[in-house]
Image (tube, rainbow, N blue to C red; front, side, top):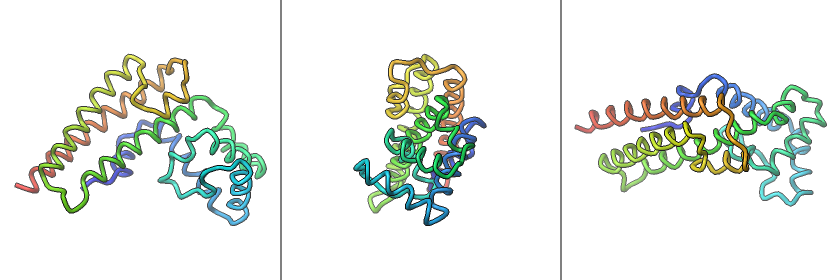
Length: 193
């Protein structure tokens, strides 16, 4: 019924979309050759990381973890990928990546609620309506600069205020997601009646 990447890609403002494209390029670069994959695994093992492999671009949340960023920086530095490495050194990119990881995780949870044997139109409607209400609440809080609903983003910003351009991008994204979700809710209700 809902595919989170499709929904998200249709609603992401340009700067967030550009950040997501960098993340996808980085993961694809690391996964693109056996040498890069091995170069990534070694520092992961040395740092006793929980994971030693990257999955392809849908796993944005891995890149948002603090230790994982350092391992990626090592691989990019060794490989002389200055363009991709520079993104990880920009505070706004790291915040964008953290937000994207948070919102993808939320959309993934919604997607799981809309599947399964016990799933029906009532569950779907309730899940989507609850999600839409959350989006409205998050948008209002984001306008005030409150990032508490986005754990990774809050962790990145630790005692810093979110910058206005990023705050506006996130607000716009949440607003567009709310509009897309209401369209999905209406379509799914019409299909079941």
